[in-house]
Image (tube, rainbow, N blue to C red; front, side, top):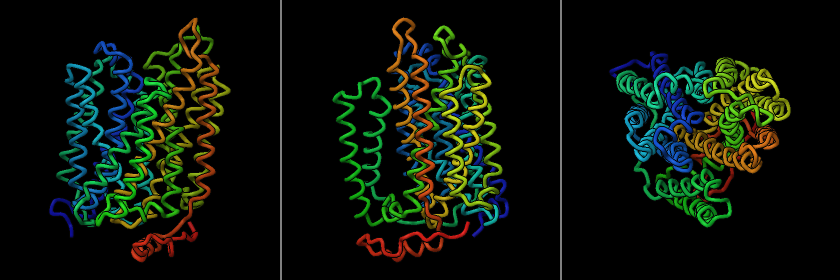
Length: 488
């Protein structure tokens, strides 16, 4: 049934709204990374307190993304898209007006709810687009996440120089407020739904284990990796994950269908997403820090926040260009091959950055290759997940994939931070060059393992997956769920 507000043929208008929402979320996610020190100075906060500006956002987005995706599958993706964009706008407004660091952190929690735009975007594209246009749109949508993160790092310096830290939030507020109205007016209501009451216990347990896992991962350097809070929360996360899985398997209407998560095409793609997240988030977070290191340390370029951001521009440009052509490449060689190639290129870029970073153009070249590799991988990971599940489970499946990528980012940033800070030279108070070299090499290794994991992704048709899910007995047997390769 067509929406009274917009015919189904206007999918291009729908996509424009969806693209703005995804890009805005990515920008808000990354713009605070290179200017965290300025925000800390503005509020007179300690470094450990200021890191909560990032941590609170990470935790909120991780919890909200799969839940909002599942609710969208049940009650309508258009309604939840308006809700998610509105949360992003409201959080941006509060952050821009925040009188204290505590209010700023609370605003970031509200912004994190906007993470729901990711699974909703993929679901809307699947619902609204003609079949021959769907793959390119999904690829570009996925790439917008990486593009937005890269652009956020690039523009953060000029914005804070011209408008102050509040400008980092006033601009997203204006864009997302308009986008929320546009979504309410222009995006058609969902024709594909998976109705049923959302089970509360699985949702609570999902939120609990995500917090228990990501909190020590993001704060381990501050608390100490062997401290009681860190170890205790990690143990609690394991216990809560087990309880969550049990609750999901017994729920009449599960938040996340465990039978779906066991499909080879799903769990292998999620594994790759985890490893890509490890490499990408840490690289985006620590490359600007390397560029900003004073030359007195014997490395680095003493770049300002603005200049160090501009040095990341090749990555954002290459990611965007790749997103435009990745689906065409996938038609020729298959999406799995594109993901493998992307991970290999990203790995080569990080190995290059680890051993060859004496001149600025060395970093520019490595960043460009990084954007090329990440763009290829991002563009087709989403397509693989969407093709691996029935239409009514698109939201929760893509939400979990995005969530797992975020978890990987938290782990990668923590590992990279531990490696770099462990090499601090007493005389300068700065990390040694070896710390960055080892750290970048470790990220290259993560991408290389991701490439190997991508080789295990089976390719299968939508119909096979849907029939297998519907036919699978409640006992959980895997009969009928073995993926059979099909031509790309």
